[in-house]
Amino acid sequence: MESTRIFNSEKTASPQDRQYRVLMIAPTSFFADYGCHVRILEEVRILQKFGCQVTICTYHNGRDLDDLHISRSCGIPWRTHYEVGSSRHKIAFDILLFGHALRLVQRLKPHIIHAHLHEGALIGSVLSRLWRVPMVFDYQGSLTSEMVDHRFLSPDGPFYTPMRKLENWIDAAAPHIMTSSQNAADLLIREFGCPQEKVTHVPDCVNTDTFAPIFSDENRLQLKQAWNIPPDRQVIVYLGLLAEYQGINHLLHAMRRVCDQREDVHLVVAGYPNIEYYRQVATELGLADRVTFTGRVRYEDAPRLLSIGDVAVSPKLSKTEGAGKLLNYMSMGLPTVAFDTQVSHEYLGPHGVYAATGDSEDLARCLYALLENRERRLALGSALRARAQELYSWESSARIILDIYAAMIGRIPARA
Image (cartoon, rainbow, N blue to C red; front, side, top):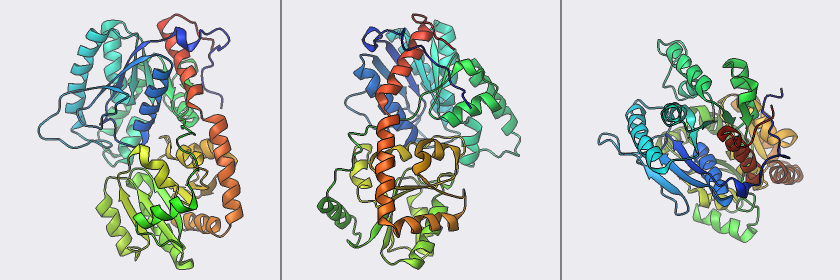
């Protein structure tokens, strides 16, 4: 389905003519080395490369980065740790974030507000109306679907319908929406009734120079030793959040089946939170010496971590969120097994290996088949890296974003 708006790049000005002041609203504990944070980070860096002045308005917690201008709201004394996913405490955080964003609009006088996630779009919509500043909504998945995925909301509960209506209102109020996947663009049009002309697919991308398969066998051996992984084991690697909707339970059960067939396999699970819970699951499955939980991995250290993998895996169950980790796998030249979802197909295309969604046994079958066939692994990894280089460049996405900014500001008209 062709659902995105097309901008007339032949008539647009060069990026250097569009060095905007951008207020980016990020209702999350930025930077926290996962998912949507990576999209925000890379968008800001490429926009700054093209001359934009970007200020990120975010929660009080998060990791500061030297090359980014991050402005944080106040915290609340009863909630001092990072926020990941849905939480009732985010209501207080968002109220504080709104007040901070209001002060920033007054002080910075931005050309445009770039709002991430639904809470950011709600705050941005209010500020846009108050100060007559155009806003774009950077959509990374359905609000209610994410809350269901995190078990914060039940589809049969009394709050589901009101939250769904709020989500509809936020989507309708946004003047323009950018989506991280084509699947998300289609969802907005099909299920939420958004007009086709106000939705643009701006894909997640990857820095293929940073995420590159340049590590030698000696480097890989040293990294295995550092993580106490026997040198003769083939490594399956996962990088991302540890949560039920990410399919970690399915991955561990699949690993149990793989280990029943091969003795030379090791699983590296990199990410957080819930580390102790999943470590206990692995122990109960008899995998204590076959699975390494690294904990949180800094984004800049991710290429080294991924370089020890022979096969990458993404058993994500969510049907609406993006899957940025797939791009990192692809760029590293890692053959990748994923559950059979639209988003997985969108990124991996014909070079992915797809297991039936939610089926641990089929996931194990696909992993085992790749481990058994080195030539196929190398061919798929090479094809995936070429696909990442050809289709998922941040420079290309930045030009789309700048075209959207220009159209919203009114300097350059858009052609639907």
